[in-house]
Image 1 (cartoon, rainbow, N blue to C red):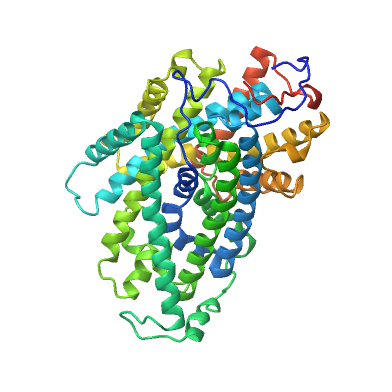
Image 2 (image 1 turned 180 degrees about the vertical axis):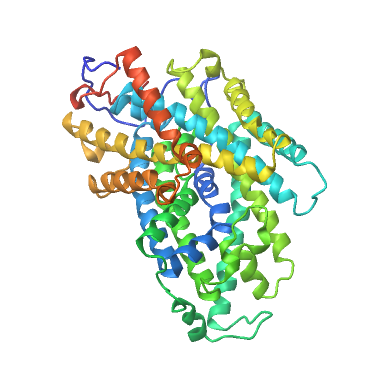
Length: 506
């Protein structure tokens, strides 16, 4: 995209994008508002809440955990509103890769797109290994690779049938998680106020409140602990950006995307804040069981601990089933997101054209096959233990999600600036992000701090763990390297505000 391209005045948004999603040769606009909402919720409520929330409270105390979730929640709110403004105006399946190419630099969009495809393709492998660990709870004698093969096959089938098939599957996957969280919060609140006593001695509200003054509570570990748990919390919220990816296959995106953005964030934040509050009031942060956050040991999930206190003796088995649903849901969403991103890159000439081919059902089959091949990294557990492979793959994918968020903030800031520079009217936008420019700037700065602080503990030790440092931060130099290489080869550069295109067509 050249900076010498003629300026195109902003035109009324909501027009068709190319390739036409409604045509026989393109994607289909089959996702309803309920699908969009559940896709974002399903991508954000998972093992980060069900398993890792205990470690968050244990490390930072109840007050520190709530503060971390509040700050990251605010950051995600601004990111969601930024993405909502972009996606409602220009609903394309490639989402922020397309926006990055249009409003920042073509090389930036190229690097952002490949980064996101790699992020979710690796994340599918992470989820499949996690599924092995979870299934080991019931059937430890069965080889884990068989479970990975089975679940990978299911995910492939759900995505290859049609986008509506994916949307329906994700809707019900997410519904199970939402129902679990709602029941958990209801049971927890009844225990706190004394309506439900459970299997232990009934405690008064003041006794529950005393858990906030145990040891160093409410804030334990100081600022360093807060930064540390911010990483965990950030991972928990990753997946909300899936709304942007699904925009290209949304029916009536101008109306449904803003609605999904407005509803989803508050639901997610409500679930997380209330869940953390319930856990912290019922279980003191000094409880050693909270420190354990292994996916394969659901018996010590804070959800399990609370349900057991309420008298549900089969809580571990129940939560195991929910966690299994969570990892399969995340993997299913990841396969969808990475496939659509690779498809969009191919449509823009940034990936081999074969990945732009679409089946008669509107599914980019070759892009789906390529993603499935990368997801097959989960079979590496045949060579090493599932726990080792899980941590290895998790480290490989960790940075990339935050890079995508940074890309959203930058793209929206420049989009709005360029739109106004070309005399665009804010009233013509289907959805306006609030608090501009504070919102994207706040999100960018906080996200950058979290990104750079991913593994700061490694630098605090007497001997630096360079292997851990490389595994954690490898995504950042790779992203910058791809961007720089594209700029050098294609001679791309930052697009001036007056040269940006706002015609909503590719």
